[in-house]
View 1: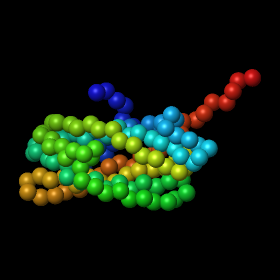
View 2 (view 1 turned 90 degrees about the horizontal axis):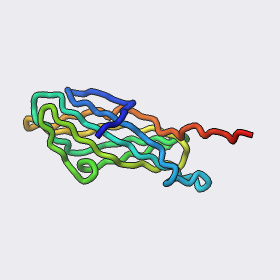
View 3 (view 1 turned 135 degrees about the vertical axis):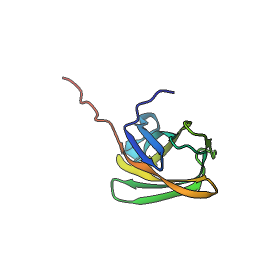
Length: 134
């Protein structure tokens, strides 16, 4: 799976990369509904097995409204990553505004304890629309 990840952050030798994408076919600007997908790649650069236990997202729309989302695992999984392994998933986010941001943390288990891994802040922006050429 090849992708360009414009956002990345490393915490405790775990790299989280994110590539957001606007979904015009699932959006309805006239109705105040904008949709994005985001592709996440989590890479274990440590020398130990780590397991993603839970997620905590902070989603902010263009009006400054903040929504927090917490839950077990990601996309129904709690992946176990050995040294050098990675895990990819794609999820989505709707917003009532044409832009916003997301960031947060994952809770990982390793060596009998839990630790937090940062998810880098990334922008949710509609690509510039081109005007008609006359």
